[in-house]
Length: 119
Image 1: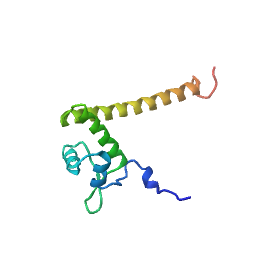
Image 2 (image 1 turned 135 degrees about the vertical axis):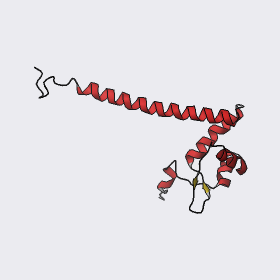
Image 3 (image 1 turned 120 degrees about the vertical axis):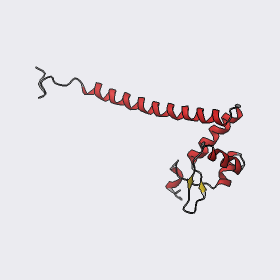
Image 4 (image 1 turned 90 degrees about the vertical axis):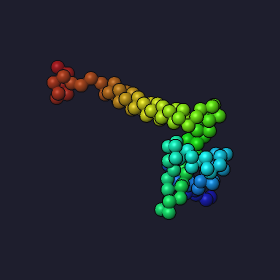
């Protein structure tokens, strides 16, 4: 059985040229360049300077296409994407705090005298 390179699993690894990314997203390559110029996308670059789009970039393009279809302009898309990123960050922070609280609750109360005796 053939093994697929681990690079496919890395969502941030730039794998696709602009023409392939545009075709996968159903857009013209110039549209991707505009989105990059406007700060909506930031593809990786090869050593020679060629844009390399990752799976995460393609996911972001899908979000952009959905927002465009909903009638948002580039400024609106930029704001929505910023809010989505902030929401994701806050959700991760909340999950970490909940995990910390659960660990603290499972550890039980600390001994008041510091040597492990309760009294």
